[in-house]
Image (cartoon, rainbow, N blue to C red; front, side, top):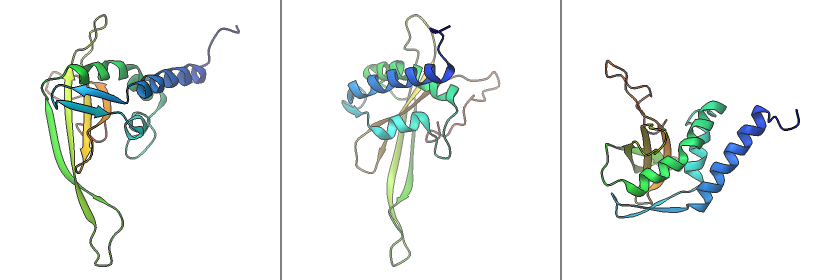
Length: 158
């Protein structure tokens, strides 16, 4: 009985393994950008939280388990499959009632990077303003028969 892990202990171990991998890979060269993608605390935080809430444990475990495949995808990607650009506000509202804006860009790489397990994933990187391009997220990628996607389609949320 002593060697049976509880769900919480298993979750903590999976999270720690993902965090170790993440911290060992702080910069990854991406052929598409011909530059490095930064793995910072924002990206790791996003694996655990969406913009509105903490992800449930099974969703976090899925993202943690897909992380090695996402990093492999970034290292090998020479093309993007999705791109989105929008504006986001930042900082406090000024005395004039206006708020500063920055461009927010997302790129998605879709790949089947596994050798043993064939899973199609979407890896997302993003840039705020003129900053570094950072790793943002990873998720399984699949479409239903009628063309609907099994995710929200919101690159920021995913």
